[in-house]
Amino acid sequence: MKQIILLLLLISCAYDPTAARYIVDGDTFALNNGDIVRLQGIDTPEQGDINYDKTAYELQNKLIGKKLSFEGTTDDFYGRKVRFVFADGNNVNIEMVREGLAIAFMHKGTKYEQQIELAQHEARIQKIGMWKVDDASYKRLSHRCLELGCPTGTIAVASKQGEAFYNCACSATNLISKENIECFTTIEDAIAQRLREARKC
Image 1 (cartoon, helix red, strand yellow):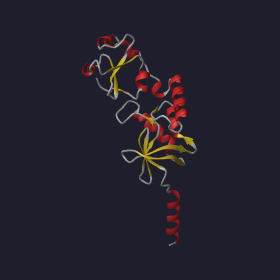
Image 2: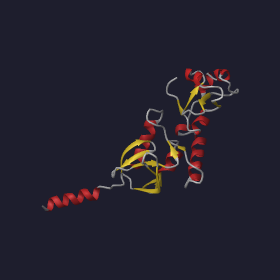
Image 3: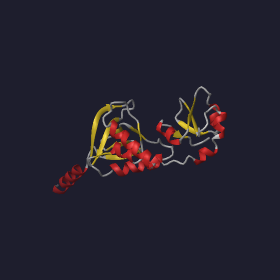
Image 4: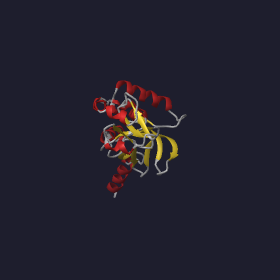
């Protein structure tokens, strides 16, 4: 009987309801208690997007086995807990942006807004993570951008209501009306607008 009680005590001591249980993507994870947490003020690639696996893996490395604490009280439309997350005292939201694994995505006046924007600025200057982009393949096809009505220097386009950007030779660009087209001179600018590179043309 003493052995059973000791075993139960060990199990209850090891179980932390606020520890990370599994990763959904680069900005969302589940806790042992069943809550789903969405990192506040940032956005990462969704499942199926380029860099999805890398960002999810890096978030896992930052959370699993660490002592987590949270700031915030907001729940989103999906019932997720929208929080600033600290792993062993480090602000994970800011770290993800600083390492180029996430982009800033917040309302003005959000707590840590300046730190997140500074982290993104540093990542862009250092060209790390998602900011390490090669515009060369897009530049080779830029002549087609003029035919779409974009100014000289444009290398990528998107629909103003869309979620992805395309090289100008992509057949999907034919579906974008001239009134609805958005033109970009760098891939960085498209990423900064929270657009994702189209996986298929």
